Image (tube, rainbow, N blue to C red; front, side):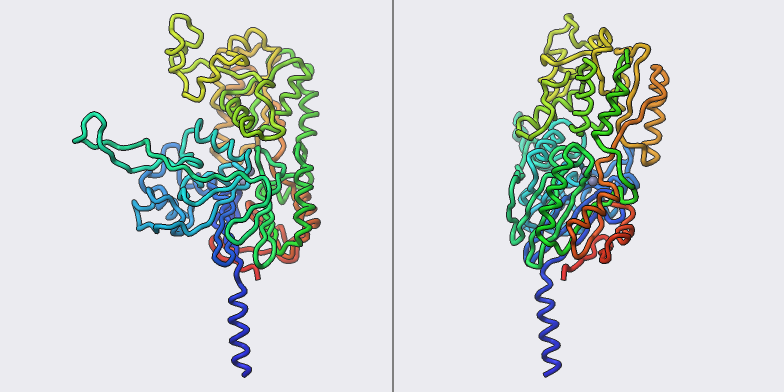
Length: 500
Ligand SMILES: [Zn+2]
Ligand SMILES: [Zn+2]
């Protein structure tokens, strides 16, 4: 009898172990989040990102993955998990048999940074994705305007051959076939399979960031995505924490990028410092800030207003603002608040009356054409004529335009991006320094605040949410979580953790 009771108990506990979490990325590294949550027969990924660290340890601009075997190469190198029924079939069938049906119910994105969303391009299109409107807008801008493999909402089918339109006896590569993916925009709670997902907008350094509470059959799981408490939307993050606490969660999966940092300098401190830096500048103010950080853009728009200048952004940023407005994303800078820099490209014939407008336009990508004659556009000549009227955003690839702009004396360069974190970034910074020295803009002013919560704020968040267990992710220092929580769950990459 005793034996039977023991077997029954074991069987019951196995049956009860319905909910599991497997980290397929972001274990002891920053980024590459791919969190598989399984509950009964439901399988959902939270984020499906690219690990820049792992990618950079194998690849460079001169050593690129092989296109036809990209998924198998990534699996071999540990950049993608070896799972079936997950990857797009046009690529998967090049190296193994594919299953006819998908084996996953959805991919839910916390935000559109590529270390969270970039590998959605390799997921089969019959697996639906879920994200906020801001996130979808940014992904569409990537698809339309960025180099690289960006296929989130539209999958361009590869390796298809069709008859030539000119000569039916000949075959040609078909590059036109596309399969749309359902990218569902969430505002409120939604169900995927058996789990209920509650999204909460939070503060981060890109539009459309969300944290989640996930209700499973064995209790609630909270996933922070990337979060901070010192930006323009800190109140959003605080509201999320209060809501998350009310679920009395079993587990908090928390980012820990800056777990070792004490309290952090915030965006409003930055804006204040920026005001005092720019107020007495008589020349041109040149700045570099992250291309999709619209809250940092807001700080520079405010600084421009204070000094009777206009912030000049590039065409990709203008396209981003336009798309965010089309998606009705709240609290974003409007296109009317900035000027759009249209550089000379290719033949360099912008505004050259010897060349018809259609020839001038051929120097630009099709998505750029809408800005060439935009009422808010400015050229290098405009900035050169009135340098004290502008704050010019200029990233690494745009430094060459300073030849036309010719920054006058008493101009400054403000570096508003993160400090170099690896050798490649250090080398690039040395190049930036050389350009700045050439144009008399060196030394520069550094002014930046992080997109990630400080250790202090993560500790406060954890105290308030009060989870039974905590699982660190997106950090190189996961063990530091045990300084403030008694039950820290550490698992290896791909190792399943059962919630009970
Ligand atoms: Zn991240
Ligand atoms: Zn992020």
